[in-house]
Image (cartoon, rainbow over all chains, first blue to last red; front, top):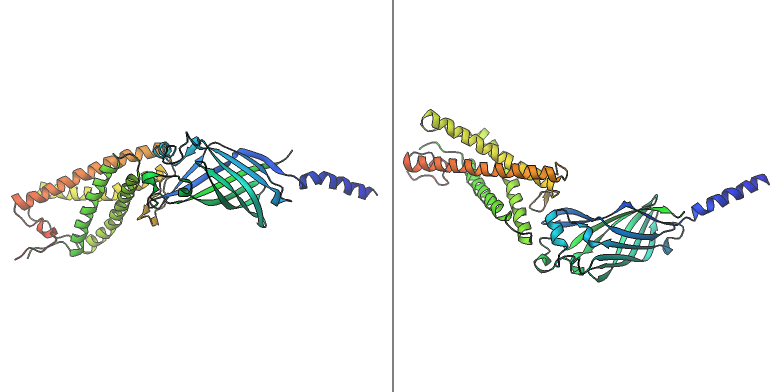
Length: 181
Length: 178
């Protein structure tokens, strides 16, 4: 009887942890970076300011949702000169389009700690479907995917030449989340 | 028949002369441009030329080691010494100038990728202060090389047109007709 009661208590205590939904994003330990190729040279950049809402229950991954908003003025394109250029009208036109957004539409488990997220990415008011594989370990979501910059009109005019700056830009994301209290 | 430099040494001399002149001209032009695809291209070409010169230099030193340079033509001792010093300076700068450019590019956070295909390792992490220092060093070395080349060319022309000796001809691309 005593043993049964103990089991019940342990089960009751363990339940919230097992059912825990990861939904508190630690922005300071999270990052959104991108790697563009200029004349064959990979150049790393990133965003200093963004917000993210994540609801992810490892027990019910299909129900997970994510929404990320990026303050485009916080872009770091690798050099001071580049930073001045990319906020301009040929690139991100930050004054007109201050925010970029990602909203998930579905999530598919790929086995183990691997998942595939699909969603809508909006850059410069252009929305396209994107899909990214990611891993989830100890509250950390980590993944990467390719954005074709010209799909969103990023890099117009003389910059539309993909021989200088490649069309493919790799986006790398990392979000540290904590389970709900 | 006067002694000439080895054919490979002569070919390397003129090829590297052309690459260095091109790299120097690109360096002067590209730094004046506002950011544009053209600027990115010129920077890339400048770096590719620099890496090429750096690699050819080793080949050239090897050739010089195997096939000794012809003995100097009769000239006053001070001229011999000056010539040797300027040659030493040219070799040193052909080595240091590309290396300083490579390091400077690393410190700027832009890897050097030879012909957009062969990546050179970044020997320094990205650091703006280090970059600014190396940029100044690269500029000084570049101007020093330009100065050394001018001395070298002036001396060669003096030998050819004033002394009317064989100095320039023995580095000539074509054998002088007998």
